[in-house]
Image (tube, rainbow, N blue to C red; front, side):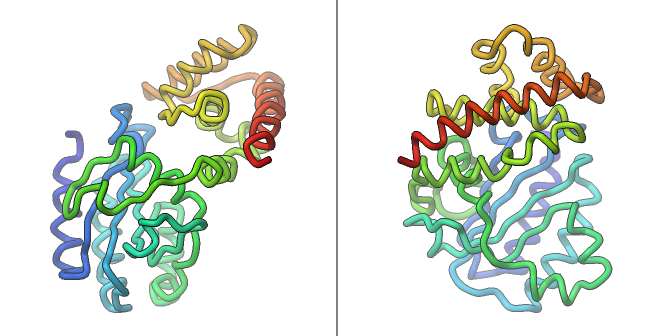
Amino acid sequence: MLYQNVIDEFIDMSKEIIGYKLTGIYLHGSMAMNCFNPEKSDIDLLIVIENDITHVQKMEFMKQTVKLNEQAPGKGLEISIVKREYCKPFVYPTPFELHFSPIHLEWFRDNPENYVENMKGEDKDLAAHFTIINRYGIMLYGEQIENIFGEVSKKDYVESVWFDVEDAREDIANEPMNMTLNLCRVLALLKEDLCLSKQKGGEWGIAHMPERYHSLILQALDCYKTNQIMQEDIEIVGQFADEMLTIIRSEKEQIEK
């Protein structure tokens, strides 16, 4: 597995710092779904703990994670720590004890005490992460997935992925590749109850979306698999986002009734 050394170091570090409170470590995201691209993907990890970890443990965990992030792929590590009690039965929105991704790196470096004290709360994204773990996840350490993670309802999963795309009309201009593929996989979920990676979502889009958008989706797929930077006509990506959001809203409303 690519970056196996990083994953092994992460496991050893987590075991040493969290100790007997560590229930398990689970890999999800593109690496678990066999569509990992080191230029475009991050490494998604979720830690489950039995009960509270201390401020000191959190601080040491963050210090080691930041160091390890330097060895990770371009998009880095994304990590959440969650208590077992919120995993089965699943609680939504899901409380978390600590979170890290590179977008928060500056906050930690500037004020680590503040970060460790305040980086906790509820995260709607965890419904999507738990769903991926249940279907594709890899147990790296600890208890088996089926013993830890309860079922996520389709309603909670849909709300979680909607949270990622609801601003697609604005976001697609800055992130055309990610938003194009995300919109495809969200629609695949709503229409056919499919839990897909970005890559598989794009492939689904080619099979199901109007031909006028095929070149856009194909370009997004090519960029996702390679080092290319996606450059597409702003008007076309805007039209695509508008049309997809209209359909997604309609499908989502049907599920919520």
